Every structure is written in structure tokens, then in C-alpha cells.
Length: 291
Image (cartoon, rainbow, N blue to C red; front, side, top):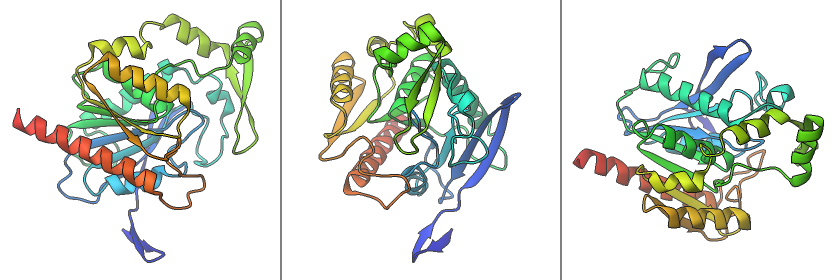
């Protein structure tokens, strides 16, 4: 821990794990307690990355209680430069299948205590926290591996994996490629047809609203009242589909709970999301211990 502007800040340990040729999981591990209560993986969303805005702060806050892992999906477009999209060719083919493989790779290495220079108790409860698209990937992973995950936290998460406009999908099918604007950088980011092919091939597997009906892993949706209307409606439906899902609304919170990039400090909405997340995990840990 070091002092920055008069406050204590955790120095996260960086790790890099090779999955395949030119495919890496790059992440950070943080923990400020010798008696961590759980292992927590934080998954970023669409056009996001582990060092975007709030995520380092969020990891630091959770590290007071848990072993915290943040990471970049291998095809999110971020390479060795953690703040720039230098691998747009990866972003162009970032399918849900790839993200699920990435998450499985990280989970299995945590379960084996095999993350480089990190020593944890792999038997601790495992929680997944996903923001936006990262929540969707976390939910699908949990439906596929229900015995590996003890709880899922969805921050303004998606319930429909189709994030693309009609025009983008038409261009991908007809031309093999389309583009999406990165509003922060002004970049036109490529989207290859393989993304749609993956969604078509795995339509049932990726149907979050249908699959949650058969889910027994505890889920909490934490959503800002100013989040996108389609996301709020989707999460309302998620809650009606299964008693395993609970929902908390953060009054006034938007899609990022008021956080921006570069990070300008926390907000009351972000602190509310953090508090509800900790309360959820503590309840699940209590329930596990009492079984």
C-alpha cells in the first residue's frame, strides 16, 4: 500500500497468462487482508477494459475483504498498452465463445491456485461481478458451470447478447465487417461476421432470459435508475424468470454509476453499488458456512 493524495492505495499485482499463440489473459490481483473471505473476479463490458475508470478503485475497495481479480478479455482490443486499443483485429472477432473460454481459463487457474506470483485459498467461495456485457458473459458462464460459482453480481448487465444495430448486422452479413464508434476516442472499431455466426450457432446457449429459469446460483442485479431503458426492462424480466435473482435499484445512477474515464473519483451511486455488492457476498458466505 502507498499514499496518494493523502489516502492509502493498494498496489495491485499484475499477471499475464498465455492461453495460446498471441492470446493472453492480462490482469491484476489485489488483496488487503490476510483472511480473505472469497475470491472475486470482475469482468468488464463492451468496449471496456480492466483499467477503465472505476475498475481499479472498485478492485481496491473490494480488496479489503476478498481476493480480487480484474482482467482484460483476450480479444477486447487491449494489448500490452493497458489504456489504448492497439489490437483492433482482436476486438473484431471478440465472440462470446472467446470470452467464455477466457473466463473458464481464469477460473480454472484460480481454482488450482495457479495464477503467477499469487497465493490464495482456491477453496474459498467464488463470485463473478460483471458490468454490462461482462455481466452477460458471467451469467452464461454460471449457467454452464453452476457448481463453480457461488454468486453473480450484475452491474447494469445485459440480458440480450445482441448488442448490434440492424445496419451493423446487415453489413456484417453482406460485407463480412461493420464498425462501431468508440465515443471516448472517436475510433471506428471493426466487427467481423464471426461474431454473428457465434451468436447464431449458440442461440440457445446464450439465451439468458430462458436459461435463468433453470438456475439456482444466487444472482443480484444492481442497476441505476438512469441506466438504458432496454437494460432496465431486460433485468426486470430476468427477476420474474427465477427466484434466484434479486434486484436493487440505485436511485440516480447511470450505466457506470456516475464514474467516468479517466477516473475523477467515486460517486454516491458507485458507493451504493459497492455496498450492495458486499452485502450480497457476505450473505452468500454466511449461507455457505451454515450449510
